[in-house]
Length: 308
Image (cartoon, rainbow, N blue to C red; front, side, top):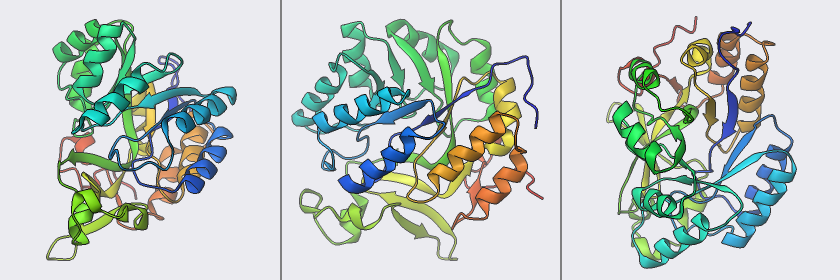
């Protein structure tokens, strides 16, 4: 596969870990990430404030380590804040003074804007048209992550009016983050109250699968977050992503195979591998299959790209 010369090659980013992994698993994972070809690494807890495998200072130490390995590090904030303590934690992240911040809710946007600090808009910020993006760029946004439910057609429309100096990032691999709730689905499944969940998310490193009555895997429950059961894989759309002038491709960490996925995307971006062939190899390992329906303006769980 040969990348076209009209558009620059997108950079690879690794999104924040969306699951509850132990400290040992996290540190081992990021040790391998340091040697991987991703250029941008997002760090921090975005789903539940009770997940404290690493504390604030430990995240910063890890960020320094990855920065020393040549990575651009971005600290990610919670997507749903429910307590004063969570707001204080948000302020600490935003005031770190060293690393960029990914704002995953509007309270983070407001605080960073008031501080005059450029920031990244996470996929939880609802940006559905260029006017919203222009408004947020005026507040200091330097990069936006396209909401996962938007299509390539919608992205093309937004890109045509994208503000100068703002980068576009697209979620290209991983279980899609679909929604957040004040209730904890995992605790409820185990018949536990949310405030005494006993950290049962640790038992499910990729969430709990929900199936339809017909037995089709439908959703994954990850604490207060709802994800797709299928794994989004836009590797076959690599040329289109480049033609749309997407600056950054986000890979979301999974419990197994993340390094292989990173290497596959990197090889395709270097022109050393055919995206369709690489995607077929990845999809063959996915327990509930791949999906790209949202990208094509269809139901999100569908696999639309012809993989034969």
